Image (cartoon, rainbow, N blue to C red; front, side, top):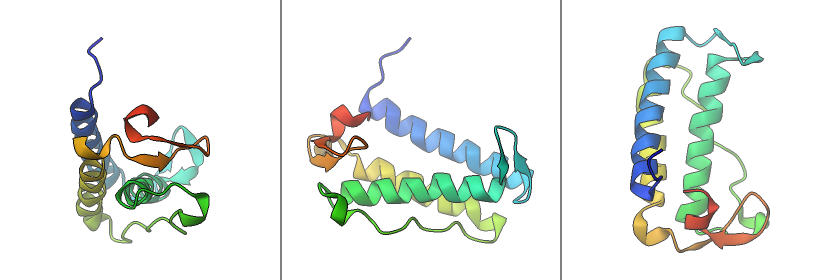
Length: 122
């Protein structure tokens, strides 16, 4: 298995987000998501794109305290025709926020502690 580098992870984020946008647009907003039957494709689009925007903001602002976390994630555009652009923006924002020079920055991680971004999974 190839070694996961930050550059390879950034390329994967961009590519897989693009593929999700294509699949979501083809499926349509009301299509149920097979692995989460209570969700529609529109729910999944909002979750993934919103999480990417939220995560990018945490890294952009170097959030180290729960009190400083973004209050909410952005909602996906209602028009499925706008999903591809919104996803492209969210993926690019993550890729930019996790640039090589940012990977040593302290940020809050899911465990509630402050860690370097590079050791938090990217």
